[in-house]
Amino acid sequence: MRVVVTGASGFIGSQICRRLEAAGHEAVAFVRKSSNRQRLQGSDLEVMTGDIRNQDSLRTAFHHAEAVVHCAALADPYANPWESRAVNFIAAFNVCRAATDSGVSQLVQMSTAAVYARDHPRGVPLREEARLVKEPPVYDTYSINKAAAEGYVQDFGRAGRLATTILRPGVVYGPGDRVSAALVSLMHRGKLIIPAGRDRRLPLIHVDDLGSAVLAALSNSPAGARRYNLDGPRPVTFAAFADALARNTTRSSGRVLTERVAHRLAWGFEKWWHIQKLEGRPPLNRYAVDLITADMILDTIRGIEELKWEPAVSLDEGAQLTSEWLGSEPADPAAGFPPLA
Image (cartoon, rainbow, N blue to C red; front, top):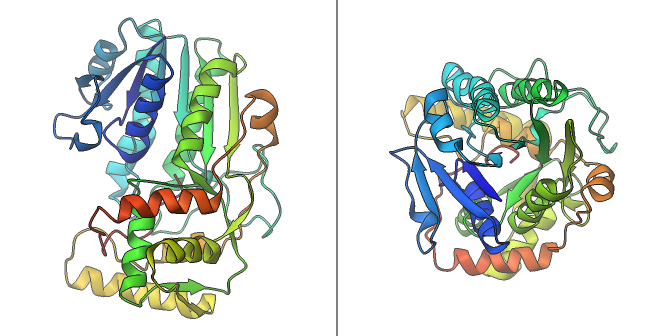
């Protein structure tokens, strides 16, 4: 099967390209002209350049393709609202329209568990039908646009013009991710903070399990429009994730603060970052605190039953694989905690 992957130069997109290639598919990496293609080095992937904001560019890339995996996104909750809307929301319509015009039969949309509303009871498993976010905090331009993008994708699927599968992974980690790099950097400096105790659960999924879910979606997803939560083999707390990385990197895990204190401290970091006109976002920010303290559990039964998919990478195995990569790569102390997926 010829499969075009948008956002193929990113952490998730590049891993999916490699999984497709290993599974015998003809993977095509769709990237911007300005993209850093370092993650694609060492492969024989066909690379096409273009812009997801331009339908003509997408039609050219999708010509003769049977499926599209749409991973391209501006995964920054603090991004400019208009830029986030263009890349995370409107571009989803462009991809769907170009796919149908080009005769593509299947689309896998990489969404995120961040699309869920923030006021769900803590600790209650979230099913795919749960309410989506409508009024996120002012510092989150990512979640609302990813939720809106799902609407476009579902409309095309329900209309029968394109079989659409929406995947909602939690926090994706593994070799090449910014989550682990930022955490280990903070551990090394003795500045990792664990808000609200050590019992809050995080939907943590290794990138290899996400790759197998994409393959399962291409093979087993029913026609129409379907949505699937994706999580790791078992619930994991943020503290357990930090501890697993600490064991494999000989660092010490973080200090525990109350949620209120951590949120105020994050607000102060953001203000100082803005005053200093630093690039990116601070390693401690309000979005990260919200994410860590949410105690989010994803119900993944639908994906297991319909896609015939199950996560296989344990926390210990995933942390070891990630730590081996971190041992050969410089950590970025300013990376901060990225959004879900």
